[in-house]
Image 1: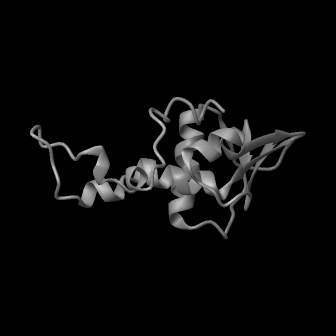
Image 2: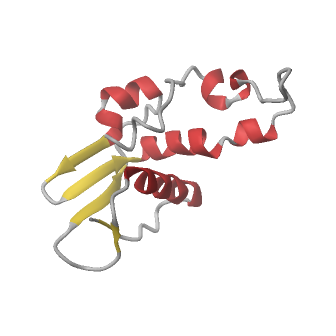
Image 3: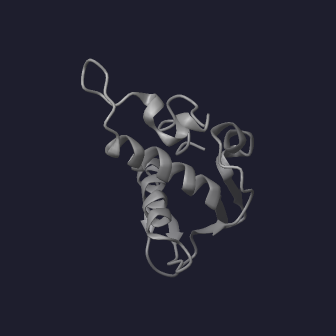
Length: 122
């Protein structure tokens, strides 16, 4: 179980990213007070490329009773899961799919293959 305390400093997009990570992790969310592991979002490093995040254990650091997640990971998840650029793109391939190169991650060289299975497991 993981206690996620409300953090008013998170943007709506960061809260979305946090919800995505928790949902994909299959860890039970605990709303209340008790003797459970707590989740805390921290500033951490500002480099939010896939390679930098992977080198830092995806910006997830477990310790005694607390798991911290870097904001950089939340920004990265927003870029991946939000797919805002792809949704607004007018580019398409012959199958009417938006090419991967149309996205912000690809344009900045931040892609790292299939992340949906790797990040939550960290």
